[in-house]
Length: 172
Image 1 (cartoon, rainbow, N blue to C red):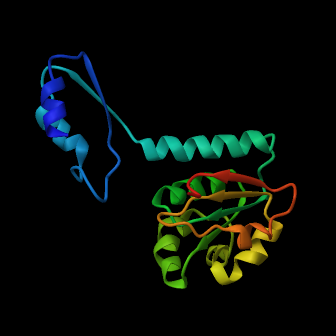
Image 2 (image 1 turned 90 degrees about the horizontal axis):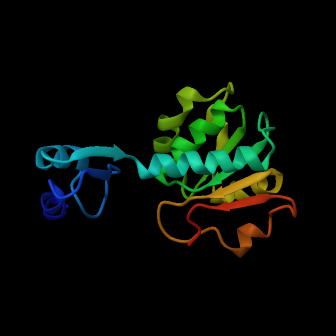
C-alpha cells in the first residue's frame, strides 16, 4: 500500500481508499498510513464492509416491500460485518436471529449487538448450529455471511421454506 500510495500522490487528483482493516495483509489502520503519505492528492476514504452491509440491508428491505417490522430474519454467519447488518435490521424492527458455529462465539457476537436490541431477551436471538434447523424453518430471509469456511450446506438448506429468500453474502 505504501508503494502504491507514494506512486499515486501528485499523479492523480483523488485517492479513494478502502479503510477496512485487513486481518492477513496490509496496514491495520490504512487511513493513518495514507494520511502520512498523501500530501499532493486529495485523500477520500470509505469502508467497503459498511457499504456491503448497507447494500444487503437495502435489498432485504426492498425484497420485503418495506414490510420488515417483526419479520423473522436469520443471519447464518459470524462475519464481523454481519454484526453491523444485525444492528441495521434491528433498527428496522426485524426479528433477527444469528446462527454462530459454536456456542463460545455467541458471547463475542452478543456483546457487539445486544445493547441495540429491541427485545427483552436479546440473548435468545443467538443460536448455534445444533439449533439452526429450528430458526431456518421459520425465517422469511436468510443471509449467509460466515467469516471463514463453508458450513451453510445442503443439510441446513433442506430446512428452508420454499418462499424463503436466501442472500449469499459469503456462502463460498
